[in-house]
Image 1 (cartoon, rainbow over the protein chains, first blue to last red):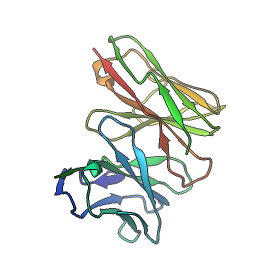
Image 2 (cartoon, each protein chain N blue to C red; image 1 turned 45 degrees about the vertical axis):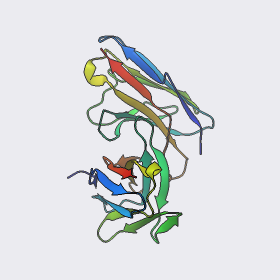
Image 3 (cartoon, one colour; image 1 turned 30 degrees about the vertical axis):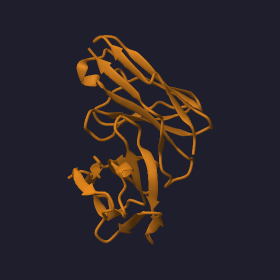
Image 4 (cartoon, rainbow over the protein chains, first blue to last red; image 1 turned 90 degrees about the vertical axis):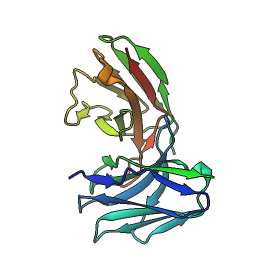
Length: 110
Length: 115
């Protein structure tokens, strides 16, 4: 089993739709969680950190479920510019090493 | 977050040759990481490079193939040695603040194609 798993998609949604991605992790000792956005042939860029209480940044909401060992990303009112690959990332406890999921591809169409 | 610059941004190389990629950070960081991302794949950690010590390589990666230097707290190099077409990939350096639990930030990558 991979340490961090994501549905590769692709997710094809119309503009204005709400879309959600899940990411599961295998190490129960994981402490820090992140979502990154990666555009085609570009480097990953941090979208948001994921906190235990959940957090929201505009149209984006991230949540953590420690009991089931998954994190989620919800995008509301999708824009064409949201089309990208979304990577989840997990840090193990006591370390700086980050494990990345393979990414979920999102296409938002007009 | 730190500004991270990589050189070259892209290159096309002949098989059997070697290429050194540079990563420069605008602030001092203890830990730097080198990743590879092959077409359509996710990020694979090659090694962790700490200043003043040997790099720590992940399973499947060896120093002879990917020698790394870390001469100071703002700079690192990764060399891809004796290249073959299978080494065609994007190579990324990243840094993380010197506190646990912080996200990594990436350079803009080096796109490498081997003929």
